[in-house]
Image (cartoon, rainbow, N blue to C red; front, side, top):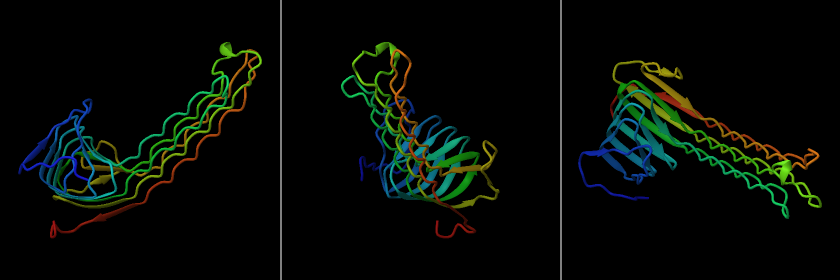
Length: 240
């Protein structure tokens, strides 16, 4: 899916994390620079980046299952490649005539990615395919005893949503003469990887009357499954 096509040989991309930006999509970037505290979103299933520069605290956001090849990577401190699922939404609170809270929605699954990367420079990077957390169940009516009216039934809490499954990661890498350190946060040359399933949403609380009697709370959602990680050290730049 191509949202925007760029015909510029050297492409420099700057997007503020706080701003609403249009996601990029292309099959090939000769040059991609992500400025400090900025992010770029990728929607491609196949992507080649000849040279990637990630400044400190920058993000490459992945929103599809994808195969990415990065021929030259220059990575600053606390850079992130994120292929996570989205969190589920909270269920609705019950009402007088429909007292039970509704269930939270499920978290979405993280994305499967194959990442092949040559690090010319690396300070620290975090790679995640975590699943999204499940939404919390809505509370039963009434949410506070003060609002209870005689003659109406208390409501049960809604169930929490299931956590999303994590995506799988196949990580192929080569470095320019240094040895990376895996899962040692914020150390120089560190590569930190997580593929956790999303946490199931908590059940909503049951309704409460003026006598402080409560209906049943909702059931918590199940956690999502963890993803698989395969790490392969490449011994030669041949083929890049």
